[in-house]
Amino acid sequence: MIPKEKTADKKIERVLSIYTKLLNGHIVNKAEEALNFGVNERSIQRDIDDIRNYMDLNISDSGVINSVIYDREKKGYRLEQLYQLRFSNSEILALCKILLDSRAFTKVEMEAMLKKLIECCVPKENQKTVNELISNEAFHYIQPQHKTVFIDKMWDIGKAIYNSQFIEIKYQGVQGSSVKTRKLKPLAIMFSEYYFYLAALIDDEKVRENFNVLNDSFPTIYRIDRIQGLKVLDDRFHIPYADRFEEGEFRKRIQFMYGGKLRRVKFKYSGYSVEAILDRLPTAKIVSEENGEYVIQAEVFGNGIDMWMKGQQYIEIMEEVNNAKGLY
Image (cartoon, rainbow, N blue to C red; front, side, top):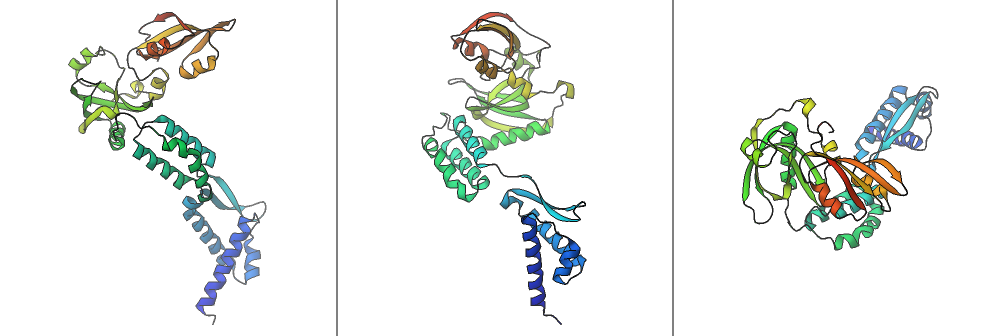
């Protein structure tokens, strides 16, 4: 009778041999392996199943999803790499640079996020390189003036949006204004120019009158870092699917997160890079072009477009159609 220790050793040797063959791109034939190791094909099948289970458990460490599949043409098993799970070094570097440039978080939060991104997503041998490439910018990082930690609050708002729950907020507007209490239908969380924003519908009609949005379905905008108190209410609201808020479409049409009605603006541009204008205004379309001067039309929400245009020396406003209903 063969001792259990030797039987276990032979199984380990057999599994490692099959695993090595698969990693090296060879086809594993059950009958051949059974003959080589003096076992039946059921044992080889169990070995292959063990290798599959090991690979499933190893996904988070290796960053690669592999699958042992049966190739009917070659009459054997082979290893197939399905896709890369982890970010590449270049992708992580790009994400870190974007995160730093956002200046959306306190310095402590930013350092923690960067550390987690690099340690979780970059192979150990490349972590030092990525850290050095962002070290100067991270060292000189300037946190936002509000110095507020709001990530957990933002997550609570996100859950309220997902569950269509009303929220009640205590909101501090611009400096010097009093704190206001608002009951809202939260619609979306958005980011723009250093800040995270909540797009929401005001539930109180008297308050909506003051905002000149009594008969409009367009949301008001709140900076999340200025929300001093948040209560997620038990009562829920319903918005028909046809009338749902589409933040992607809204985002194309808003500048500096200044809310307001839908407008259509038309202007001339005579600068050096029309691509920069088209990137800034995703809804912009070139109507005509002559001698390097472009006539451009765009759909926008609110008054943020006015602020932006005043800072552009190569732009001349031609005309505007206010309340451009049906364009959105």
